[in-house]
Length: 404
Image (cartoon, rainbow, N blue to C red; front, side, top):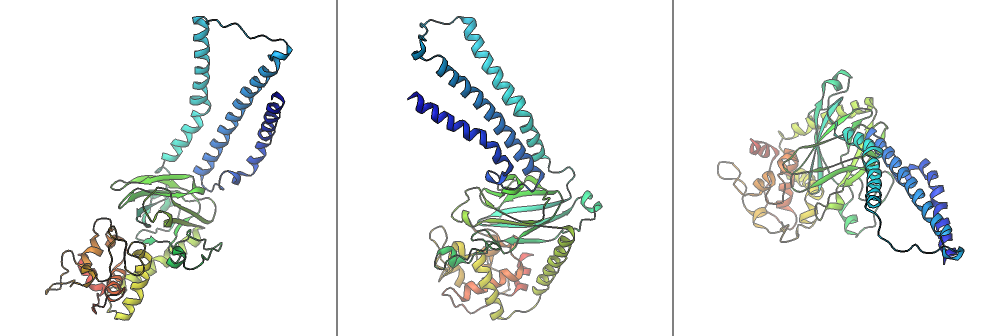
């Protein structure tokens, strides 16, 4: 038995001695850190593992020595049982206590304290501010503008850019009716239609909140994780020092669509970031102009189908059958087949437009997420598809007027 135990101990020591080789390949246990916060977290982790390994080796060595040198086979006898003195008890209680205090509050506590201070330092030297809002089950990004430092550094101001980021994996692949198309550029369940774009090297202050339940905006390579709480603004920050595409997910259990809420961030050099900002602002201006034109029913139906499948199908299903009682059916429902406007052209309380604009129960207020054209299109689609044939249309101008 002793020989077998010694073999196992020797094998364990061999693994322990070769473990430092794994430090050269940090991806074995950590994703590649691309922010100062993630790099600091990796260093703290490695320090702690080294400390724990040293403690383990010391204790194990003492145990092995005791087993070999004090075994019965070489003549050692068991010590007669006797009560220890009070002084001895106090000594062997205080010494381990002091050792643990030194390890916890000095050796490990100082690096951990430094990391916590770094994580909470969201405002100093920040270049820009982005608001992240989680909702079931998508992310909304709003660029709040540059700070004074960002303006001084010549960083282009993206204030006014606001968009929703949805899972881009087609619903038939999610349902399993079609094999998933998993590619490096668009991995299954980990890609979105609108990515958050950040400039490389800029410190970005992240304001985080939620419209419904707890969410958590998490990208492993950024080293930051903060729960988004309804009714509260919480803060974190990122500074991506390496250009590339980084993926994460909501890691707070937020409901049935929890697995379909990915995060994708493109970190671009400042010149490419400036070009993206110009392009995005031009798209916003075109969308605003589109709210003032008269759309045909076919145009609204075409865009409404896209909006519905991105934003509504996860709850109400692609067919409109819903998942009662939590998510009611749209097919043949009173809401989708009743009049929207009164004789004066104002939308009726609890009408189809009222619910889409202002939300109800777990349904979010889409007026804060979708633009006028998208809301008009999806309402028109829901009333003239999914087994419904009301025949009317809603124009973006009517939605624009309803917001006022």
